[in-house]
Image (cartoon, rainbow, N blue to C red; front, side, top):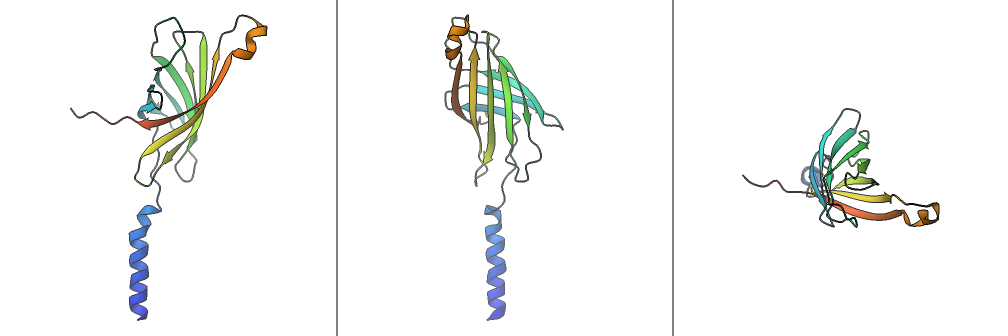
Length: 149
């Protein structure tokens, strides 16, 4: 009976162990958010610096929306591989800047999600209008599926 109990314990630990491990989150690649904006993280270096491109799907500006550069930092020392990060977007079509900060989460099925909060700062002409210059919100990004060729 003791041998059977030990066997069942080892078997249950072996079968259940996969649900305890968390996949490592990788920011490199193509992402889309809940508003339909797309972002591409091109590379992350050994210090956690990264760069990429952002295509917004929402803008209240008379100029044509253009792809804009982003730069950021990723914490590589997170022991459970669900790192925090932050990045800045320099909007090329307006006098505005956005900053995003968040964390990458990986669910039990390996699906990566970036949960972010952002600040959007637009140019204001006077200090009296400064109160309306900054917007705040949240976005959830998911990885874009690779298209089959």
